[in-house]
Length: 165
Ligand code: FES
Image (cartoon, rainbow, N blue to C red; front, side, top):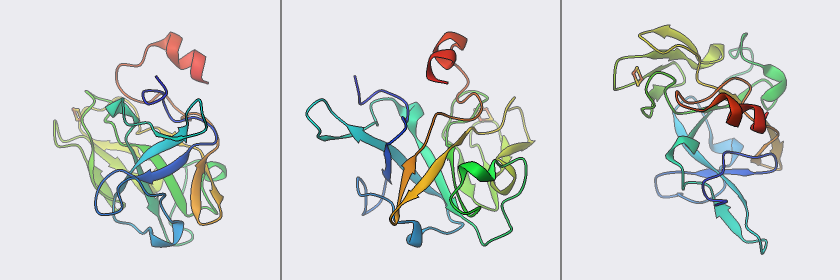
């Protein structure tokens, strides 16, 4: 179903938790604290569909001061080199990763990621970075511009990956 589909081009990112759950994320309210997001697309009748049917769709969004986001982050896929979105699913065994923009930590086996550097692995067993999701600004909201830049999640099948690319 559309609720289970991964983030798709044109989706808007909405808050996944807290008092603003379900509301579009405003770029101006973001910072280096972790903000979790779901992609929201359209249903068959044009209604809003939040894609939370698959827990693997959980995302994380940060906004850093200019100059702090560096390679291997793909800056072209960020908003003005400052706002960035990643999958929040650990590439080791699929736990939801916590922490902040200064450093992310997986609660399951202590995998560590560096959000300012493309969420590369800086500790523990994860085999790959948290996958960066390409985004752009749509007013003060965030729109998805394509599929993940690297393979997300631990268990995605190559065939599925090829389909989404
Ligand atoms: Fe994240 Fe194992 S699931 S380190």
